[in-house]
Image (tube, rainbow, N blue to C red):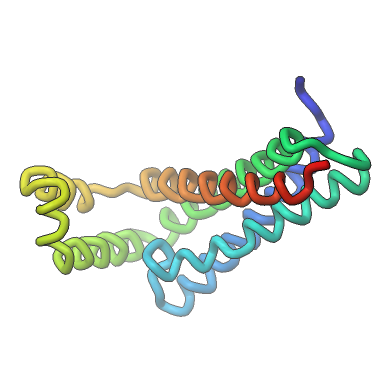
Length: 169
C-alpha cells in the first residue's frame, strides 16, 4: 500500500543526498578530474549515510519498530530520489559545460578500452569490441545522465538492503 510518510522521508533525504552527490561531482570537475570515470565513484559516498539516516529517522518518528520491507522501501525511496536528482544535475552540468567535458570522458573511456583490448576481445569477441568502441564516441549528455541514474539506484538498492536488515525488528 502507498505510504506517504515513506515518500516524504524518501524525498527529503533523497534530494539532500542527490545534492551532496552532485556537490562531489562538481568538486571533481573543478579539480580537473573526470567526474564520470574512476574518480567519480567518490560521489557515491553520501548514499549509504543518507539511507541510514532516513531509515533511522523513519523508525524514530513514524514507527517505533519497522519491518524489513518498510526499511527497504524507505531506503529505495531515498536512493531513487537521490539518483534522479543527481542525474538531472549531471545532465545540466554536461549540457552547460559544453562538449569538452563529454569529449574528455569519451577519450578516457576509449583509452581504457585500448589498454584492456586483449582481455576484452577474449571476453566478448572482436566484433562486439569494435561495436562498443564505436558506440562510445556517440555518447550524449542524456546517455551519461541515464548511466549515472542506473548506477546510483543500484548502489542505493544494495545499501538499502543492508540498512533494512540492520533496522528490522
